[in-house]
Amino acid sequence: MKTLSDQAIGTAHGKIILIGEHSVVYNEPAIALPFPAANVEVRIKAIDGESQIHSSYYDGSLANAPDSLNNLKKIIETICQDFSVSTSGMQIEILSLIPPERGMGSSAAVATALIRALHHYFEQSLSTDLLLHYIEISEKIAHGNPSGLDARITSGTKPVFFVKTKEPETFDLQVSGYLIAADTGLKGQTREAVQDVALLLKKSKRKTKQLLSSLGSLTNQAKQAIERDDISALGTILSKAHQHLSDLNVSNAQLDRLVCTAIKQGALGAKLTGSGRGGCVIALAKTVEQARHIAKELMKNGAVETWVHSLGADKHE
Ligand code: MEV
Image (cartoon, rainbow, N blue to C red; front, side, top):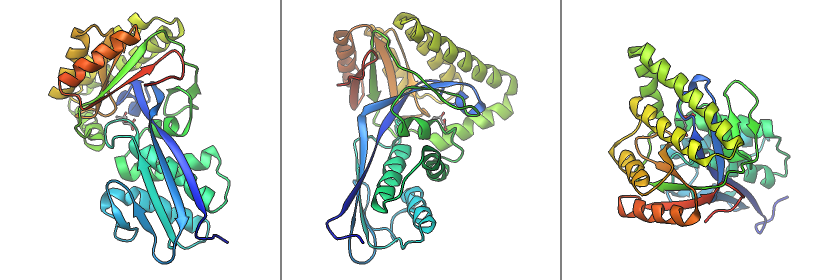
């Protein structure tokens, strides 16, 4: 029996796609990294009456939550149904440091934290397969037809080499260099961008297929560059991937500007990350000083927030 002071907590973190976004939807590989600098916590406690949600984007009853929270509503309903319990009597607080709709896996991370918190709250165990099953329900509502990459990476703690139809390979990242992430401040458009790539594939089949398979090859080359700790080669590969994503029509002026700025300021390579059309870019630098300099210049050129993340150890700033 829950008392009013009981509180259950679930956490998750954001992700950065190093390479392979969009082509991953077509069974090409992608590499994604957990991004602990951006994380989410969901707290649930018992209250009397109707369930309430408290978050930075909505404060109010679960029943009146806006359509943008339909994915979370569905998780709560499904889990409560699976446990044969009522959806009322909970205060659900969502504390997220992941900017939403920026390709950092915010929706999958919030879903993960919520699913974990609900399982703690109802004192039920949660296997990885069950967690992924619930995240998929949520991500289908949030993004249409996701590859499952966000679900995998926001629920785990290691970098992942991911192919949609296969068991993901996790690996330890030991590259001598730094990753800079910069937010354009504009919402990415995952659903639209994924749909537009599908349309492009219908319209110009040969060229689009070639771009997608070339992104797959670049991802394999990126894995090899990581394995031989070759940050310069990795940078060149990331820049080529940005060009391909731009040819797929998922970049935009703000992303291109940040990519150009990073290269001009000495980055070894740069690209958009996530769905594109907004969201974030990533860039690589050899030293932390260079990374900080690039981050500063990105802020002067339109970024609203930057992060510097070591690729050598699990450190971030
Ligand atoms: C979005 O974070 C990544 C995309 O590849 C879509 C997906 O994998 O579902 C654009």
